Length: 71
Image (cartoon, rainbow, N blue to C red; front, side, top):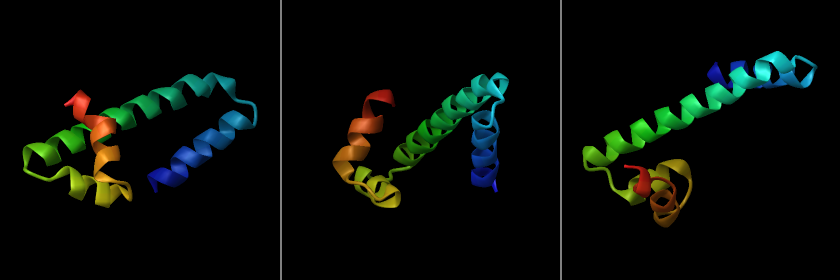
C-alpha cells in the first residue's frame, strides 16, 4: 500500500505539482531514518550484518558500509 502511495505522489509531482516535491523529499528522509532505526534495533538484538545483508538482497559488506558508521 505504501509503495503505491509513494509512486502516486511521485507521479503527481511529475505531472506538474512542484509544490509537493519538498514533501516527497521529506518522506524520503523519514524513510531513511526509519530504516536506520530498524537496522540499529536489529543489531542491538544481535542480528548479524550477514543476516541484514541477506534480508536486503545485498552483501554483508554492503550493509556494513551503508549503516555501521551511523549506529
